[in-house]
Image (tube, rainbow, N blue to C red; front, side, top):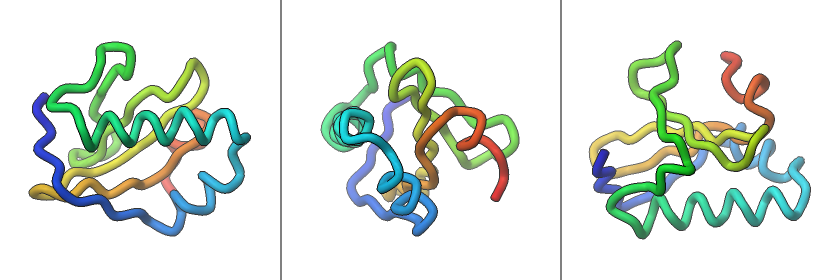
Length: 92
C-alpha cells in the first residue's frame, strides 16, 4: 500500500499512551512513525493490516507485543493509539 502521507496529527489518547511506554519502546515507535513519513512502502516486518473493527483504521507492528494504530484521511495520518496489542485494539 502506498500511503501518500504528507501531514501527521495525534489524538490525545495516543499522546497519553506514548508517555506510558518505556524509553526503548518509544524509540521503536519513533522509528515506525519515521517510516510512515519517509517511505513509500512500509517494510514487511511492520505487518501493515486493517483494523477489523474499523474500516478506516490501520495497525502496524512496533515489536512482538506492541502495535500502533492510525487512520489515513486524504494525505493526513492520524495517530490513534500505541501500546500492548490487546489494549490498543480495544475500542475506547
